[in-house]
Length: 474
Image (tube, rainbow, N blue to C red; front, side, top):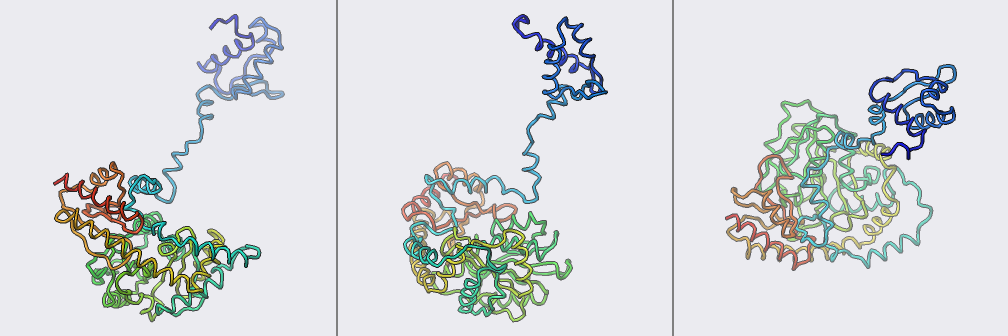
């Protein structure tokens, strides 16, 4: 650079920066007076003042009356000070653990319409009752006043509607023993925060719902996987001999279990209640799939058999009506509900007032029960299409059972097929499915297939592609 083209004050700035950076003028040292600098550089004092002001603006020097001008930074400390916040350090040290990479990839891809969605655990848009929902929303809007905060336990007419709805399943609880939540995941978060301590043992089926696994892990719980058979979790595998009583829970999905689709038999439910009663082990019953029966109604909930207030019961409209409403409920002894309601107020000050009013209308008007008849018929058609396609394209390549309800088929592939590689190959063919390894630790030979979301022809095509990929390994 031609120094003659650089303003004189800028040359002085660069000269002083060099002295500071090479250690001639270390941090804390006093720089020469303006007069002396003017003499040294052969300029008038106004040029020196301009240079000093720029150096001060850059954060290298600072002038104080009676003290003079001192060096407060060198170029290295200044660089460090001016580096942008390293958010990666925060991202990786947050309390709640991130989903594993493959789960994040699945979550992102589930919104990609170019993929055949065999992974999504929700109803197809084709089943969504859009016209009825418009009517309910319009009716709710016409009755709206000021949308303020609700009672801590939730909108009372909705809690009454839930109480009446649960009574039909044999669960007799007043609205004061019901808490409205923003879906069952929030219910589990409240349970973790309000009823358990870090390190508390949480017994649950192995495999189990992946987001409950991650939620409990992030809360610092000690997860204890329990074996299952075709009737559900094995009660004889439950033992608290090594643990302090009053510090553990059992989390279970007895109806159309996620991911296996298993329906717990009535006999097994009674055995489980007895085993947990013997061990003084409270039960968290996640019953969000109950209404999705396809052949026969399921056995009564554990909560309906519960005579001692041992079971905390969770339900939701997310799987049966609309995930976007974000409405679920917890039914439990009143002191437990009071505790969780207080925590919910601390967390979000209540679920959406509008959603609660809409949910109350669906449940209290009979529309929900009528809607479920349509849902079951649609799911029967989808299950039939999926099973027929599996018979055609997977026979002799994999094993599966016919689910009695819910969304999922738990597909077992040969042991010499690497599941993650199979997932990747299907992904490259624009088919998205959930490898079983995300539901439990260790080796896994399973794939979870959802027949609830993809259009029928896409569902069949996805299974055909999956069969071709499995065959390519063999």
